[in-house]
View (cartoon, rainbow, N blue to C red):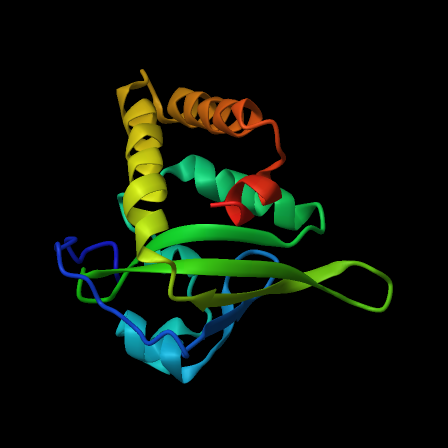
Length: 174
């Protein structure tokens, strides 16, 4: 559906007091999307329900960010991340996401919940966009996709380690 829509250099914005909310099952298929999500992404409620959350994946996003996000969620941790998403029309929007696992009474992960807010523009412009461009470049210059993901993930972890903090502290200190 969205994979066929070429990306365009047109930003869609949402208001600072708005929150994009979605829930997924354990495989990343959307089970809930609020009205803000639909309006900003351009997808109808029917198009979103049951679709993989990756329907929003913008080609400017390095895969290593999602590897880190899904690994942390799978371990039961909450995750904060800056994400550039693609709309149905091919435009994009930046969001600061807070994703958390949902647990059943036995402590098993049953799905995920994500709330996304308007990110601070300075952080996106000065830190995140250049970092993501560097990581994407690492991914693209590798001999194959698997090696590219491994190389960019290692580069991301090195960058965080250079700061002498964990991932959460790195993101929340920006």
